[in-house]
Image 1: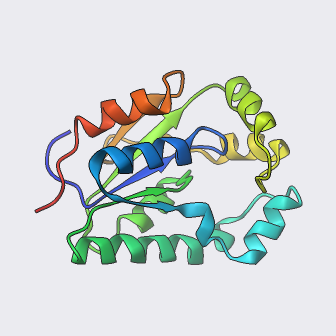
Image 2: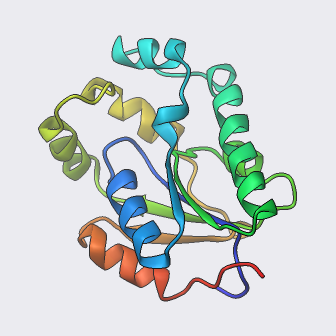
Length: 171
């Protein structure tokens, strides 16, 4: 990867470790961390809690809110790490709108590994029954996108170390 970034979006399906890696990455870089799930409107949380997959129209407002935080961070010259599924290219395009340079870190792992991790989580609104819909919606990073794919077999600290060694904040 070359060049500086305004933000990093740690992306992937539910249960891949976005929050754990994002928090560790932000800590290592000295950047702010935003938990994307905290910005979902109550209607989205209710749908997912009920096992109903979100549709594009459910996500637009949420993605726009996260994109606004990324723009504000750029304007403040305070780079930010955000956890967000960012499953589709059009979602990632929306997150990197506004002249921001966003690096997408895709946490990639097998369905079995992620299902096992999700089954161990307590108190999270996303049920394991939605995992297949997450994988069905996932569009891998494309050649024109600024991104890194990281296997989730490594620990969050190891992944964060690999990513942080390749990051330069925007001037």
